[in-house]
Image (cartoon, rainbow, N blue to C red; front, side, top):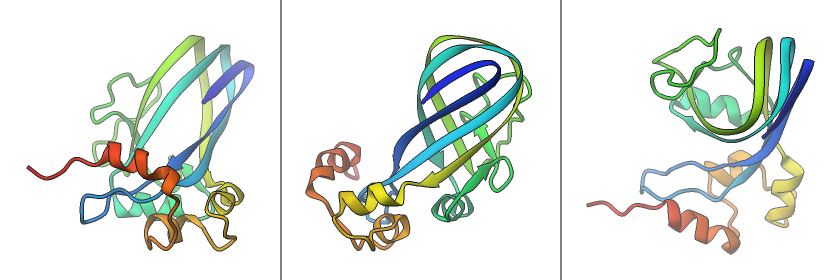
Length: 161
């Protein structure tokens, strides 16, 4: 994700959603966008690698619908215990989604912001060469496959001990 601000700020980036099945195998990916806008006493530019871990079925169902607002539709916390939380972040140990990030750049300030996550349906349909390939059909129902994702899926798989 990329972030920039001078009083008004914006950040956004694309990623994939995958789910771990009952067989300990990971689903094929569906494409998503995450972005936010903010206003406040803030300045800077930053890039971040962000990982969201969806901890509850409620969180997964919210992300699978057309658009989810973090903090409004689902609860989000930074890390399992709020480590690295910025001022104003509420630590919620029962969070639906945990966020982890590695940041580069300089950014300072205080702001009010809201984030949204929504599916990049056109990317997912193109990736599977089928207009019916939507997030739920790929991630939950397993109706679509693309061998190009097998390396990613295999790297996430940890066989049972």
